[in-house]
Length: 203
Figure 1 (cartoon, one colour):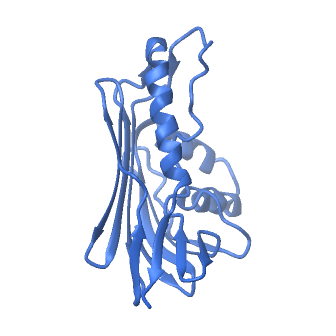
Figure 2 (cartoon, one colour):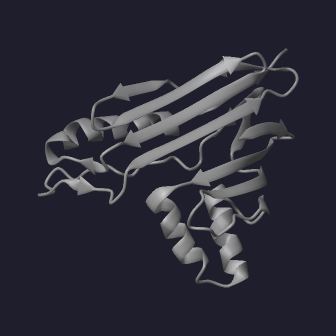
Figure 3 (cartoon, rainbow, N blue to C red):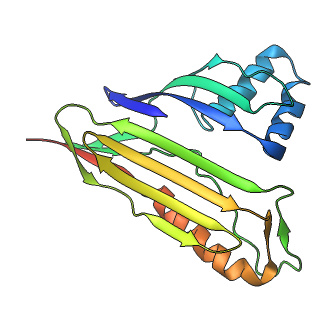
């Protein structure tokens, strides 16, 4: 996604690509509803949480074809992702917050099955507005195991902030004896999600 800031409104355009079981689920729901409800489904996929004053528009509805990836192109203008305190702007760049609530209950008796291989990848580039510099970026996270991987990065490259979030569970399963490690990863991930980018107007 490519994002810009205009008068504290976060504007962007992006593309969502889905494969495998996740795509099948969306196809099932979207082909069994009215057109206006189908539009809401795709809008919700593009931007998971937005208010009535925000604008989310799918500019290319996907071809509902089981043989190719589901591809949605969209634009948005969001007013609730940026807050100001004096010369500082606090920006929430990832509102989907993948997996943030997926802690495992310690007393669960069985392994956790996703019913599919998991690979989610979010990439965003935020162009800094003129006159602002970066004063805080959330922490990175890199946890690489055979059974799951969490990789989150924030970088400033020239006048852009680059954000990448990739979570992979190649076997589609979290074993019960790995719940403790998994939960520590989710705890660290939530701390990153609860942090914000801070940019400051130059004096």
